Each structure stands twice: as C-alpha cells, then as structure tokens.
Length: 173
Image (cartoon, rainbow, N blue to C red; front, side):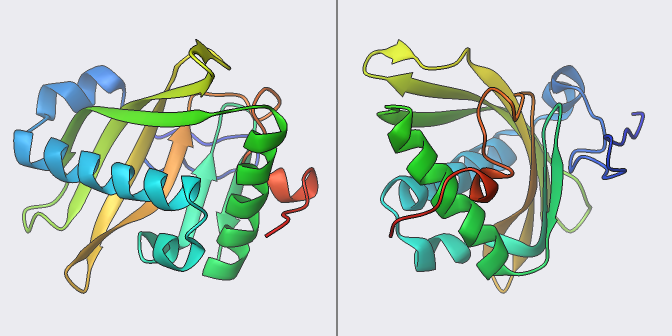
C-alpha cells in the first residue's frame, strides 16, 4: 500500500490502495453503506439540492484526479465547485451520472471509516460522454451520519473539469 502524492503534494484519499486491494478486503455491509452514500450524493448533486448535499460532505475535504488536486476547508468552497461542475455537465449535454460501488471495507476497528471504490458512468443520452472510470472515496461517520471525506478519480481534469470547475464555469443557480 504505497502512499502517493500528486503534483501539488496532496495525498489521494485512498492512500494509493488499488481497486484489487480494496476488493480483497471488501465486506458486504461496507459496500452497501458506500453505495447508499454515493447514491445520496448523486441525487442531491443532480437535483441541485445543495443544502442536502452538504450533509453528505465532511470538511476539510480533498478531491484529487490524475492531473489535479484541491483541498476544501469549508462547505461553501466545496459547493461553489459542485455548482459549477453541475452547470458544466449541462453545458456538455450530460444527461445522466451514475456511480456503482465495486468494493469497500471498514478501515478501522470501530467501523466508523469506509474506504471503497466505484465506477462512474457519465452519459449523454444513451452514450457514454467520457469513458467510464474509477473513483475512490473515504467515508467517515460523524454524528450518526456517513459523509465523504474526499474523492480520488482516475479521470483527467482536462477531460472532465470538476475539481476546478469554478474557475471555468460560473454557476447559475
């Protein structure tokens, strides 16, 4: 399990674990919880329910990709990017966004942290807008609620701007 850092020195949230390593340690309860959280995040993101979305996100939060990284200290900063990313999806004609958990495990003995990975499918009509890709997330339980502590995506920011979407697209809602 080699920890890797990106060009900005930010360690991805999954500490360099491979999909295979996560699958080897995967347990059904963690997979089910991970899927529940990513479904909830997707629903709030797609429906632009920003206040509900913040209940799924822990701050500080970090998002990394193959060619970009960013740390978020506040929900407001995180939401600025989420809003811009959602508007960017509209501009690109993206009509659907799905994530399917492929493996997850409890990362601590108290079962208050989950590390997992999922495949992301972004569609324009019935065709993939970009090739499907893997994402890795760490979830933490705060106040009886599971929240995303961060995301690493095996997608390039230059292909699908999300991490710095607020610098490209101005949110309109």
